[in-house]
Image (cartoon, rainbow, N blue to C red; front, side, top):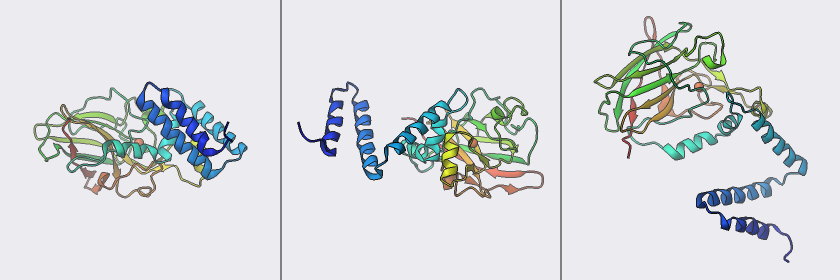
Length: 275
Ligand SMILES: [Fe+2]
């Protein structure tokens, strides 16, 4: 039997995958194994460090329940969620760029007429967001659906905050015959990702802040088109260049123009025809 050295050990570990029935599972496990070996060879952890890593991942799993997904937060704060998002959606001319869905979307938001506000308690600075939904070539899409949600002025989504009405700051709008939509809301604010768990402890240990720049979430969809999951960011936000989860793209930063009674934001969404 050959001496135990790294190269034949890796070849042996990869060789065991040859019998996998699912080819994609084999490919994923092989790549994970190769990169894990390279990682370990690079950082050469002590056994205590390796155990600390396992204990960290165990704590991340134990923090998860039906309301909280600490692994998604870990993926987000490492920048991996946005990498997966980019590799799946890329960017194409005339098509709105994507950003993270985040953990706070809810199905079943109220369907509202254009021009209606999604703020049920009216707390905050009023904003009108309006524009069109078009195809890649700029032709308006009638009947496109915009599912919108955001935090309240205190930085909390209504699911995190018993003091807010149910479905506060959530609504579903539909474009008119010219592809136009308009909604009223309040100016969003920056807010921290949850930092009371193991991922927050890691961010603190790394000297990182936990804030996301103010944004409004959108899922824009229309029959025959690929839906876009995205966010519109406030141009004057101090965290725009250091979003804790790397969700900001230049094309998603919008200008809040101060009107006489309310802020105004104009944004056109572009959808790509489904194959
Ligand atoms: Fe958010």
